[in-house]
Length: 552
Image 1 (cartoon, one colour):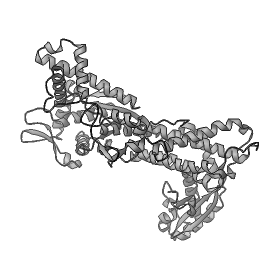
Image 2 (image 1 turned 90 degrees about the horizontal axis):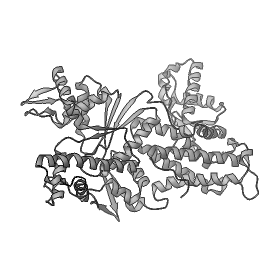
Image 3 (image 1 turned 45 degrees about the vertical axis):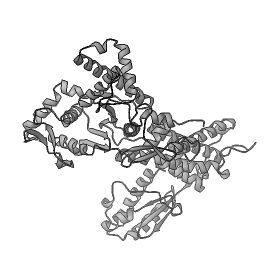
Image 4 (image 1 turned 90 degrees about the vertical axis):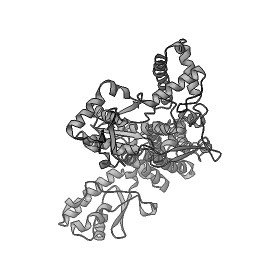
């Protein structure tokens, strides 16, 4: 019995109890809260439903809890139900009911933990979207990991997710990039506002090899060549780096296309006509302060040129025209103002601002020997995705970046994440999966197929804790999707590994028979529990884009 099953049973029993006592069952919430108590001595699960509805129903909460406890105790799947405090209810499941979770996991397989909460919702998930002027830095790397994991989690809840990279190929930074490449090709110093690093020299050398006459072209043609070809080479590298990191996109959207197609001009004129832009000091403004921005934003400057937000407005309109119900933007720590301006853009078009969600990710630092790592071997200025992967590998990089809420900055200790022991969080989780695989492989030497498992025999605290932890997985995934917080899955996996390692290390919990002993129904039940643990670990790691090794 999963927590969701228990919640359904509890609501049904509560409705019956209230009706039998002449009280109104309509006071019950649609979903009854069932939680695991912090202290296992208080039971397997606890609920405050009597406190929630007692007064509304016209009953003393503790008295109502007593009625519910009496009715629950008579249910086949409940071992005991006890009243605590002013009306809390502590519940223990029968061992066989707990064991049913194992069967449910194995029957569902890779689908265990999935749901349909977002079925029918078309979601545009835009993340990374780093400028094509250099390699992906650590901030973009965090989004490459978190964004990809969030996409997997939203899809696991039935969402129709499109991963999108907004290719910023328009603006002054691209000109500075081109000027930097020309300087490198001609042996001139890097422009004061330009880009430096080995990658600039590499791209410039590639360009000269492919276009030997590039430096003989007139300045405008030369600049355009280095601009066009340089951006293409840089972006090819970015896409390959992300692919090697396990992050791929469904759509690469060029910012320049919004201007070339006239979409920006059309969007601005539409907002002017509707009165949702106001004129001040010769410029056109959008009232983004009404949606949390720190100031209203200029959309059209006094000289008639478009401000950066003009492209953002047209881009949002384009997304909605493509049929997306929800547009999620995952942006860096210096982009808080985008929350208000993007919601203001939605409202200005007469749309619901809630179709826009903006997630802000905080900074990432690398630490080696207790000292922050500041410089990149290749980029010269900032630490990149390539640097992180070279230092700790793809799995550890992805896992470490998803492990914490994006609302807080993180320090990645390179010494910790390269350890091959249980101090390293990803090793701890992956090793749990490998241990399950080893037991399952070794079980082939015994006659397990001929013995039916009896889950009612698994009545120990270690078995119960592991089973209940497995049962929590669907709720964790649902919560991670609702809150847009993939780190909830990471922390859950560590909790599951923390329940499994003591189980396998406890000699009283033996799964395989000793010597010539025959396979017992308890052995068979425990093997099914190990298989279920393996399945949930693999499912959870899969949502993070992290491998589930069978041997370590």
